[in-house]
Image 1 (cartoon, rainbow, N blue to C red):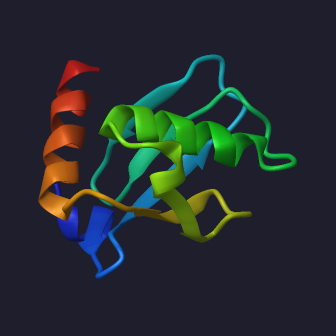
Image 2: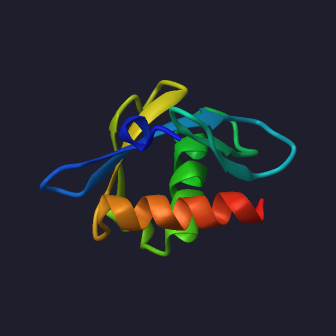
Length: 102
């Protein structure tokens, strides 16, 4: 896995590349080569899919939803999300463990 595409550290936190798939029959999470794939069952209207993505990502990483912020691509399928309160290596390790359980 090329973790440079998935996560990069900044002084504000870690920016993750997340691809969101909306209106899915189930909520799911997985890692791919260049992004974190999150499937939500919410539609992409009025921020509902973004809110569901933030909640799922916060739950998976063990942080508060308020520590997750979309910094680029709020209206796009591919988003860049800032996670505050964790280091890049910690995030990648947690995501790898979760991905192996899927």
